[in-house]
Image (cartoon, rainbow over all chains, first blue to last red; front, top):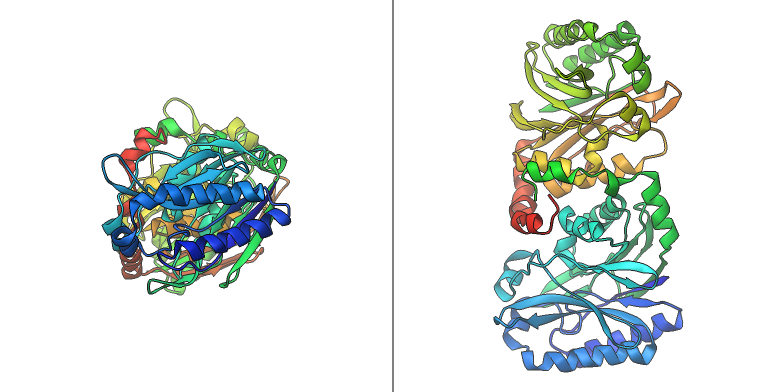
Length: 265
Length: 265
């Protein structure tokens, strides 16, 4: 299964421009034979939490989702996009959604671990663990940005059967050890492939580091981006993931009963 | 606090030779000003699980421990050593012990996650989480080899207050991603310093990869060994650990109530 990642600069609250960027990337990725395109955190609205929360009309969200589904359908490619969502209680979450090449929603996830005062001012942290669906021959889960820095979040996906974890992110410049160390370690310690798609350039005064990465289930770097806009590709092989799990069976050799006694969960 | 790590080749069941190697390293490390010397898994008896289990006289263990305490006392240096221990129920565990520069035992730990059929044939996995003691101005815990590849084990030490985790290991050749990726990620994701001391050369038909490492609480490689016998050094700074914890507060921003609901613990 060929995975494509979009790394790009979004324009805060210029949904038109951001969807055009995403549409062009979906065209490119589909033309290259990719089964799915992973895009960065909050890309359609830009990553500027307080401004998005203050100025984005929540009533516009269903229309934006419909346009994203139409992009997937038009190019016949799966798509992971990230948008705010408003709960029945009125809380704003940061979410990610996986739609297939017909535009049908297969999976949704709301970010559990919020990063920093801006996100916490604008959004509420969610509470549900990542769910898993079959996509492109792989059991697939979603996490968002800071979530993946916590081993517990990726473990929660892996123990639910995930083989591929797709992560929209917005990682500021200066944290290269997150993709280079933590993402690769998460992949290895769970024997999952991970795609981690970041912004680049500056949005709302924050400069993003790029460095989007695909890590294989042995921790290898399968693809990596620099600090400018690009689409990168990596082939994810389910047989390889299953072989890695046979060699050093981390998931089978966990001791969850002890972890519970130890007060970890 | 200056930490020293011994990487060396042990001779299975030649306790005399192995204690001489360890004594020379303790002399060298103390002369260099180190507060503590970390040594590899089962180093005094050699890493050959089935043979150690079959041929080591458990009645010899108290005497070996007394000799190790005497080495620490003679050089006035803290020492982490690893030996088998036999429980009241007759189970053999792989353990690690921290003695101070007077030879007094400060901390003991028994390996929870056993690796591979040879270890499981010879030893039983233990069940207690790592405890934490103050040593050299740092809250210090012990883990052993395969334990540290599980994020849960290092997390258990960190949530108990550990700032420094000392890990005797016996890592076979061909698994360089363990020190280079997992150890550094464990250090970063918990903001703990980690020392990981490996064997080198061949013991009982297994070739060890060396690659012993000290990782700082930002994931940086503070010291690393090649594949031959050596003593390596790194200075561990408690203020630096506390500063890292302030920058990205991983430990404070965990969501343990959710992890429990998610069935992780």
